[in-house]
Length: 128
Image 1 (cartoon, rainbow, N blue to C red):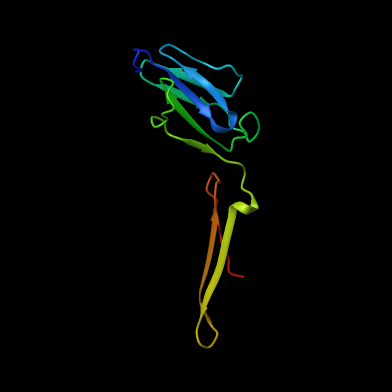
Image 2: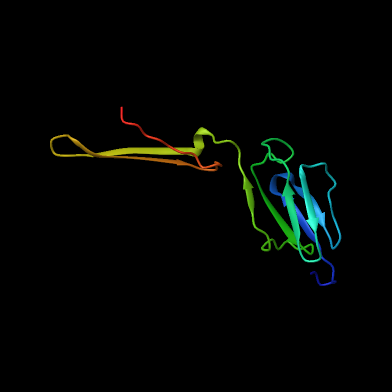
């Protein structure tokens, strides 16, 4: 509840450079036709993202956040991050092995890190 006794909640997407949804005690509204909707009560608001794509208007590599009562304070909201499809520079890997003094391989370590990917990828290694 804001100091004037009313409830105000504003949702933003970083890459959009504008509010995407504004809610008060009774309703939520947007100046844009977007694949999102919101439900407002006297004490909370819920933003629903109906469809997610990796194209305009948000380019979807963005951070969603909200503010209350017109303040820049965004601590009241959980963050939702949506990323582009993985790119080659989002992956790093390393390969190492240990050998005995006779040159026999005793262990192999392969480490693959892929960032900003959902769902989490599965890596399988097969013996040749």
